[in-house]
Amino acid sequence: MPRPRPSRRRAPLVGVLSAALLLSVAGCGGDGESDSSGESPSPSKSDATPTGSPSKAQGPLSEQQARAALVVEQNLPAGWKSADLDDTTAAGDAPDDLSTKDRNCKKLMDTLGGDLDKHEARTDASRDYSKKASGPYLSSEIASYDATRDAKRALSTFKSVRDSCKKVTTRNNATTVEWKVSELKTKAGGDSAGARLRGTAKGGSADGKQLTLDLVLTRAEGSTTGLALLTTGKGDTTMTTGVAKEAAKRLKTVAKGRTPTPTVPPEQDD
Image (cartoon, rainbow, N blue to C red):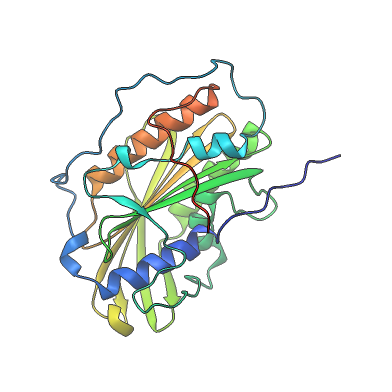
């Protein structure tokens, strides 16, 4: 008899990014701006040795293991804090999902949280961060599947969609963004792939804003760790690469049956 799937605790990544988008367009544009020259501070690295049983994880990760693999504040540059991007917008209301009519391109974001139709992850976890109320924003996602082949399929889908989806238009209330999609080489290590979406918002308070959305997906055994970094301006390749490396290390540690350090803080009650 198949095991019941645990209920998802929040909306898919597309919903989280929609909240971040609403926040960013109403804030100070300079807070999230950077370029790919690598001037941003590198993420903090942990010098602690992973602890726990060295036994290799069998089957999908438990919810506790999935949470343990999430990026923590110590993996981020100074100034980044945990944030609830589901509930908070600049307008004070809950955002609509960031929507697109292109089902193929939508898979690019869905793969990060294990939300693919007919190949949904068995367990998942997520945690969001922001540098300031006006952005930039980061989402850390873990998805764990019944079999390694399913995790490989998720990464393969990510790569395929990244290469086939050259342009995608998303909408959120009065704001429309026409994104151009390209490969992002992050050198996160292991079995990973990255994509960069750049676009200019039209309509609403976002009108005229240049936005960059970096997506990175990395696989370890039967699980994946997804990263989404949303900024104004040209993006921040240095930060994306650094955090993606830390995320990959944490997932690989958990996949080996160990607990990465620093540990994820206890989950807060709603």
